Length: 361
Ligand SMILES: Nc1nc2c(ncn2[C@@H]2O[C@H](COP(=O)(O)OP(=O)(O)OP(=O)(O)O)[C@@H](O)[C@H]2O)c(=O)[nH]1
Ligand SMILES: [Mg+2]
Image 1 (cartoon, rainbow, N blue to C red):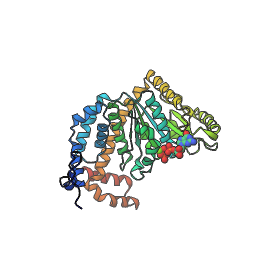
Image 2: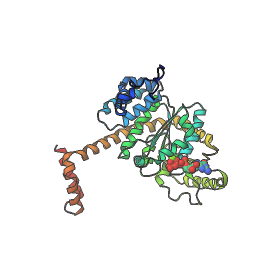
Image 3: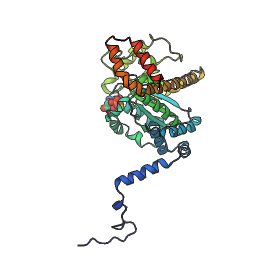
Image 4: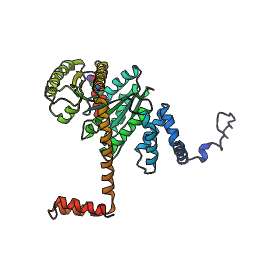
């Protein structure tokens, strides 16, 4: 039987349906072209108007490895910069499973309930390999994902921590220009990522869980020194007492650390991201810190130092990239490394030889 002709204007007539001649590939290309049609100034205007889609798009531009996108990305950052800097930036770190995502969901919802606009960014150099945690976050941040006053962006992927961190640092500027007044940067406590996060936030929070009385074991001293607060999560059910004991132990330990340049004495507190007990107190603690460091001018001083640090970091990163990509260096690197390993030449001479090869372009 011949198919009945559909003459309703709401349906496409067979034979002229766009899908017949518009392959997925072509449709994608058109979509892509539309995506890139926004000029820099349009993107900036949309970001300043609080458009999260434009914000997302601009962050993608920053993250792009296509050299053609770089001037455009820089233009957008430049346009946003005068409107940035007006937020509170909070870093959160903790080992896998400590409850970072669950905590950020509870904490973020608390903030939006207070009328705040919260952006969550992540630094996880391993995320290009394991997408697991991002998938997990979709369920753990269920409420926040739907919240119109929240913006969640998983970590940029990239080969070097420095590169990933720089992109996150630039994304902060765009989020602030988009009207987000509280920026949360999450990282898993591995490698050097905490140092990168610490160098771009005002307040650094270390998330822990109570163990079997050996709380301080396995914590890198550097992380403890960076922390403005240690929060012992999962203080619920049978864990309440253990969490309290851990709090006492951390408090005692923190007193042995040298005073922080901010003059702030790091605080230890407990919470349950699951029951939300203690969550509002953590925000109050952060507010206390902000008031304190603004009154002693440390707040601005730290941001100024961070700006300089990121400029120098970017130079280091760029020069290193250019050095290793240089054809002379690429050709001779392995051979000279081998000679150094075999004691044929000293490491110093090896380095000078390569640097000379780089300079004699
Ligand atoms: N009892 C209890 N369980 C919690 C609490 N917070 C998180 N959890 C549970 O701990 C597990 C890990 O939580 P996540 O939020 O995924 O931890 P994470 O630190 O983000 O983990 P990674 O993303 O793998 O680094 C989940 O099963 C949570 O339900 C809490 O306050 N109390
Ligand atoms: Mg997580």
